[in-house]
Length: 563
Image 1: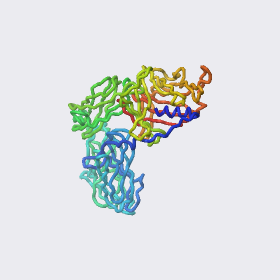
Image 2: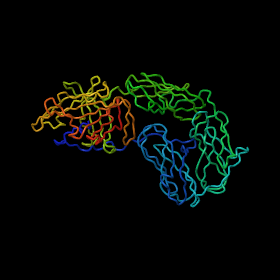
Image 3: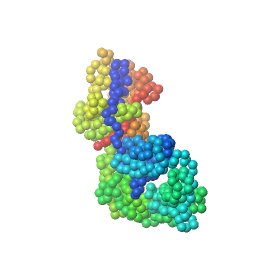
């Protein structure tokens, strides 16, 4: 293990053991996959435009922005861009760490040449959507002067046309908005807002031409009252209103599951599933519904090896609507588990991979990627291979690693590991680390998963014995469980991840200073370590600390795959 190499290097610096910085072999992060969200006309959702735009005035990157929604299918790095129109464009980069719908803000760059309405094409992955920006004439930054156009009734003085379906206690989506008519006499900036019944319709932008024109006000909120709801405009148009009909979802929703009748498409599994680990709020599966009749839904899956998924609620009419099925229960069997989910007469399937109840998985092809000292370019790849090593102590699984030397994709030995009950062993040559004159192969227990916090053990009891330049030296590790089955969060360049059921183990060096007399060497070498093992995943973090408890080296998991 890289951590052991670094650990022993520090311990025995006095005898010349050295370490070379790892080279990154993984290159850039894996690109995210997904799609931009748009309405039926192809306009981007949620249609958010920030800032005011003037001809001849340079844009401010953090003020002049647009926000778009992306349905993330596969997490990873992203680049979202627009084309360049009228001398300016928008762009955003980053990393998606959460599947499902994510809102992303694109920053501006450039200077609009002329006033007018500019139509931008936003691009992500293989999808596009449109967004329109109004650029005011130079010096036209004052408030617009306009009136609402009468719609034929005394109250509806905005010729309002309501878009989308509204259901009691169901949050609105990008399909919900209202189109109103205005008569502009002086161009400039404006804010139009109307509220009522838990709903808000609002937009801030600029008029660049005079005359009668249509403004689309996107809706936000959740309807709270069934039936006709009066939506009233804010001053100076408080005498004007329009009506929104809200459905009382007394009957069941009608529609189909995305991907039915085969695999659910899309289906995004969140959380970590481990044999013996009760599911929590992070364990869920996102699926897609196409709804033709608004109403209530009760979606359930079958129970497979001790756990299942379900969701209840109300939903509006619309296609490609994403909902989360919450997981409950405790998995009993490792490996891929196939679930069938039902909505009305529609069914589809999704697969959840359950990890073994093991704090150091050793199954063939299981692999991990680690990042050092929060440096995205300094990383290590480890993989368990099919071959094993048989010695008198037992049969050990072989781990290999890529540390950048020789050049990728070559692999080098990274340790031998086995498990017996709650004890995890490593077989290694202490002489190669300590600098003994001769090899000194032995096994030791690096982790126990069946004992309580504060438990301590020494390994091995007779120490790692040998000679350096003919001088006898005997050392051993002292292990203490600091925490048992607690959640821990790891933050790397790819984002943050919280792991459940983590055991934190402290490891210190002891030196035999007289026959049978051992001394803690922490203050002498200014060094000790902490290892964090997550059930079903393995080592997620290692810290090297000095005698003052300051972290001097950090190794954190940024990706794993368990078979």
